[in-house]
Image (cartoon, rainbow, N blue to C red; front, side):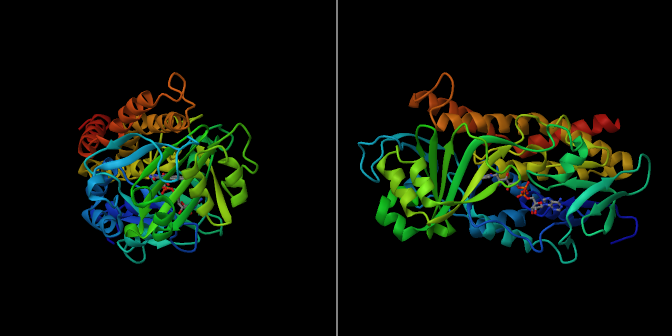
Amino acid sequence: MPENKPTIAIVGGGISGVVLAIALIRRGLGVQVYEQAHAFGEIGAGVAFSPNAIRSMQACSPDIYDAFERVVTHNQWPSKKNIWFDFQDGYAKDSKVGEEKLLFSLENDYGANSVHRADFLAEIVKLVPEGVTHFKKHLDTIEQPTGEGKVTLRFHDGTTAEADAVIGCDGIKARTRAWMLGDEHPGAAPVYTHKYAYRGLIPMDRAVEALGDDNAKNGKMHLGKNGHILTFPVQHGEVMNVVAFKTNDNDWPDPTRMTLPAKKEQACEDFKDFGPTIRKIIDMLDSDLDCWAIFDTGDHPMPAYNKGRVCVIGDAAHATSPHHGAGAGICIEDAAVMADLLADPSVHKAGIKGFEAAFQAFSDCRKERTQWLVQSSRRTGDLYEWRADGVGEDAEKIHQECKERNDRIWNAQVDVMVKEAKQSLATILKV
Ligand code: FAD
């Protein structure tokens, strides 16, 4: 790397950090990634990508999109190619297993696009050149000079690193967010949404045998009272992914841990009042499970995503509950916008002020959409569980509201977002 090439430090090597690193490297920028774990890693569960996310992958770098294409799984029936999810009544006791009433379907031009998280991450990390990532680097704090000079990152192992700008991609419990807001700020830590989820992966042949071909091989959202289950195929249709959500008023037992071990009996108890298809799905889960608390940043959204030459993107900036299936997708939108801002020649001409302006433009342009998503996802979780004010169990109203909310997510165009962000950058830099 030439001596004078500015360096951007990325804290965190999850989907946001890795995608952003690749997008910046493809634009010729100098990047170093600091990840606390000893290696890249994701959990063994599915994640679905919406149309805006797919367009954003292409905008970040065509090879990210190609990597996604290698591992993506769609609904298995050709007739369901454009269906995102079929929404079914998972609560009716009088239905038979695999014969729930279809309430409505939501569809778009891309249909359902899910990947096994670990497979997707494994594909995209191949695109990060050697020497860029530093593992076992847990960021403790940041020192930012008021004028010229590098920003210093201090790690838990006592080492430091310097960069011209820092981007926090360190997820829902981000140190960078806490550093920006102050540890005592109510927005520094995420909040529990009173929903939790059991997750599981079931071999497809078992799922087909138990639930029938359609239920097992295509995306299904099983709605019910104070709980809902979604299932969709992953690993090219070899496996059915299950996420079973439940809501109650209790506090999460251990706020320092977002995942706690659970037994299948607990899940059976939680879903005992649901219909037979849901009870069958729960019955197929392993006897030892992980129970995931659903946290978000919705109570205290960040007033700004930037502070000088430090900025946050992805869950570090706006962690959302997963009910839109769009949290990771919006991270990729963030990365696409950030990469094009930082690659703008005006940023480099302006030196330090250029990074500050790019981060300001990013924050100004991304706040509204990303913070709306967090609130809309909360509302959507309640719509699925017949808890939403003014809607309750009314399937037609649930359909209409879900469609409107998803259209707002799916139809957004990343090139328009980039254009707006660059206009904002030009205004800030007065060029
Ligand atoms: P993370 O994936 O959390 O990555 C953060 C990285 O930073 C990690 O590697 C971590 O080790 C590292 N790190 C943390 N702290 C430090 C530190 N101090 N120093 C150095 N490194 C650090 N989204 C979708 O789009 N579709 C879905 O279907 C979907 N389903 C979901 C289901 C559930 C149950 C949940 C909880 C979320 C779901 N999401 C979904 C949301 C999605 O998972 C997240 O939005 C996305 O993974 C966030 O990526 P990230 O890279 O910003 O953060």
